[in-house]
Image 1 (spheres, each protein chain N blue to C red):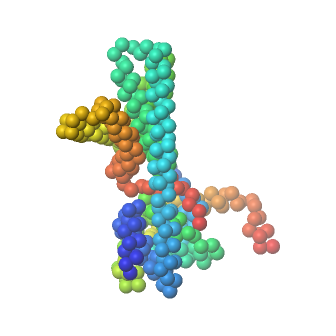
Image 2 (spheres, helix red, strand yellow):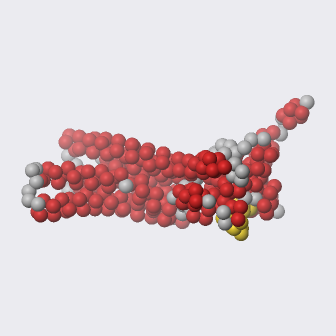
Image 3 (cartoon, each protein chain N blue to C red):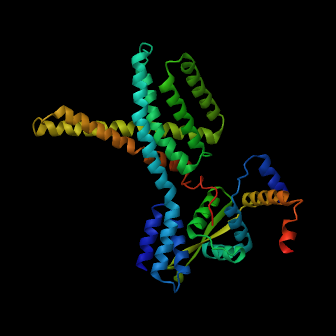
Length: 122
Length: 250
């Protein structure tokens, strides 16, 4: 099914090209599932990549991904520790998933034939 | 926390109210035990990343636009002295030159703020290019034929696709507001000054002062051009402020 979505989106010429950080953010949202909001996304990226993204870059990237239709957000309930402000939860859309698959497939094509990962482990 | 409300209000100037609220909520949650200094440093970092593109676009639009405000009429009228325009066409050529000047503000602003892939930017850049080429090379018959032809082609190409049609409409509205903004502001100041000179007697050199102030008003009209393009883009395409920043780095 995912292949079909990716294929249709590419054929229609509407596939958004993804930057490196956009891919990282999309992957973090996918890993977090229902619990993906600003704080957890940043923590997940920091845990997995060993580098802390700047808050500014993260929020502008999330806004941009939403404007491109690659993620969608919904507001949760307000909580006291946030001064009564709601969390904005993010989920990856079908279009975002297709763009991510396409981007990852490009990486894999480039890696094919290289023993980059094996030589790194050696 | 009072400072959180202030930070939220400031952030809401650059993004939507709900996004500002959730961002400040995230900062409050993360700033537990880290103190108010950490909170404000983080808020400023978010603010800078939201605002830098807009600030840069405004500054570049002023510089680029004022440069063309000086350059284009000089070339245009310089050529007009050596090459006589066809009878009755001078007003139209003037109008195209003025459009080229006004579009140079919008072109620089939209290119930086929304990126070159944005349909509104593409329309603005194309129209600006055509207006400038025509203003400088109108005396060449091939340019007098090619520019209108390209303009018509651009119109037809825009009309057949919905996003491009919307971008064309946005450009027409922006250009209309640009002309109205620059012209109406100078007209307003001129009329106000006329009233003042009537009520308080003739000024020392009333017409000279009037003329100078009308020019200042016209310049102010030029300076509001980026605001016009910003508003028109938001009106037609929503608050799409970050399209150009494809590769934000961590």
